[in-house]
Image (cartoon, rainbow, N blue to C red):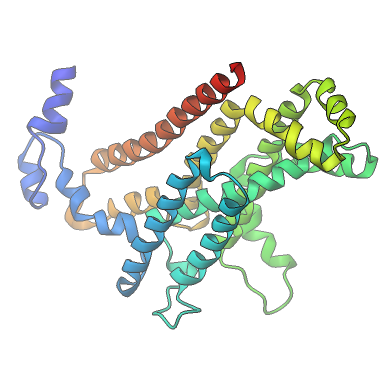
Length: 317
């Protein structure tokens, strides 16, 4: 089986050429992936704006890389993320810099997958933390509202939330106000991710011994200082694997936006399969998509294990 896989994927594969060359060969047609690569990355974004997509992806990638180093963790990194997301949204649309407009409805391909995943994690993380604290709050109203939010969202499939965000949200907007479907999908992902992260954070908060809070009180720390300097660092560290698992889940689920008409990376793969010139190469398309998603998810898993090891080593010192 390994020999056949090697022959199909490499030895007898076609890396350059047209569809006729691929059909004449018995191996995989990677020429199809190469021919459609621009469409996979940029989708329906106007050609004049392609350089902006590349620059935006590079900036996001650079900030993700910086975020992996604990030396950069802090308020400055948070502000950098907020500034980058605002800048990227305006820059890609071209609405604030006198550039060629690239409306949200044209966003598609890799840029949509990256954008939805990054913004969903950036917004769901603090919201989930607030919900977790609300669920543990001694204020009955806050606790009940937090529980209602978490349980309601966790009890509904993501695809239902996306449909609700796509169909129901416009019904409640004032007349004349419209939200692009990409924004509505983004809201759905934030709501969905926040509920799952809230339960993970709650587990982490409850795992911290009560003595930690009592010790902080004996040092005259305020409630906020106790939470920020004593409780949260331990709680978040204790649930790193569960957090990464949720990150991976959200990233993979971005492919569901296709059902509400948003073309993410997998959507562009599927759209490419309808090209009459390249019919019959669905296996190569889905294999390429699987490799991309696996590489990203496996990278997150590796970093999670590295972070756990580093934090455990420091804890033992």
